[in-house]
Length: 279
Image (cartoon, rainbow, N blue to C red; front, side, top):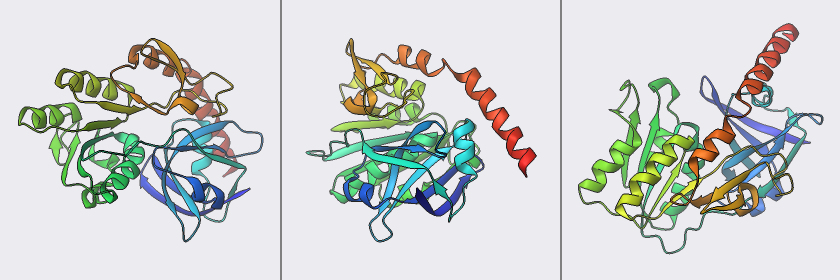
């Protein structure tokens, strides 16, 4: 069992949990993830490590409530336990030799982008950040990004907060004005990462994206997290989760991610009804 030490509600649908996991804290690096199982008879889900605290020996994960398991996880409170937490898994972000980087986060992807941006900032890299959300009520980690960014932009699709538009619009404006980067790191919804990668390819800027496909065990055995990269099959859990955005078959990845949307929605509905009956 792993005890929850802290909980923060970031938006109506996004929460952060701080979980006591000393061995994970000892080895975790930016870009890696953990596999969590809320109940001993439940499914495993991958969640990226949003931060670690060496003093409290806690791992922070930020997640959006989208299905039955995240709904159950969100019901947990400080002092409660979760059944399993395995990690750190996946390859960490390669930070070496980067002098100037643009970090792009979309929605919950900002939770993955932040520890990478902070690590780069701590390595004295010049960090430009662009983060985007659908609307003002979904914004989180704004002040945290501002503190570690040399240039910072926050956009909302509907214009309800800060700049109106898409992250790709902002990036293209910056590139047209003469900005250049050693690397762009884009993390968020697949269509967003696809658009960023198509844009940076035109400018010849290396781009890394973090893939979060369907995943069962996190060790490369199930094959559920396969991703087509440069025409070759890769597993996000062991070969990634980060890949060259210019080589990803995003269309195939988008189709795979949509395979179980109906089942996920039904599972969430059943879990919500069950929770309502118990309350």
